[in-house]
Length: 164
Image (tube, rainbow, N blue to C red):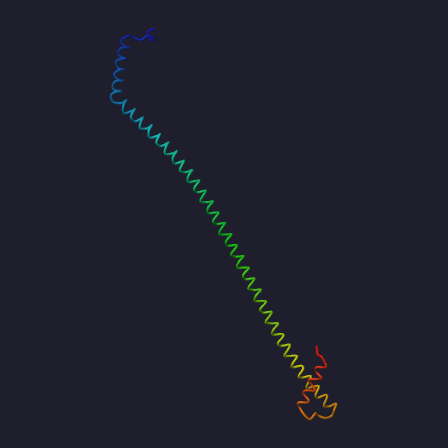
């Protein structure tokens, strides 16, 4: 039983040495250890607060970035709409100018055709008049005395015979 029950002297010296170790620890080591633990605790707490702040800032930045992205998309869409409208306006203007130019060209062509038609009709009338006079001279067998009379007779005959 001696192993189970320690002696009184052993207990006394163990209490003395334990008290001495506790006194030395309390005097020199306990306050620096506790101070270090409190500093470490404060540092961890500040780091957690900074992480929370950083998380909040990241959320704000993310929201801001999403807003900027939406604004950029809206602006891009507006620019594309404006570009399409401008393209359509330019195309419409080009179509209108083309139609106007083609109408002007057609009108000029009609005027030219009308002018040339009138010139051809006048030329044809003159040729018919000359041929008619020659035929009439041959038929009559003689030439009219006066050229002015001859011309008047020709014009009278041409008016009677309507040319299409």
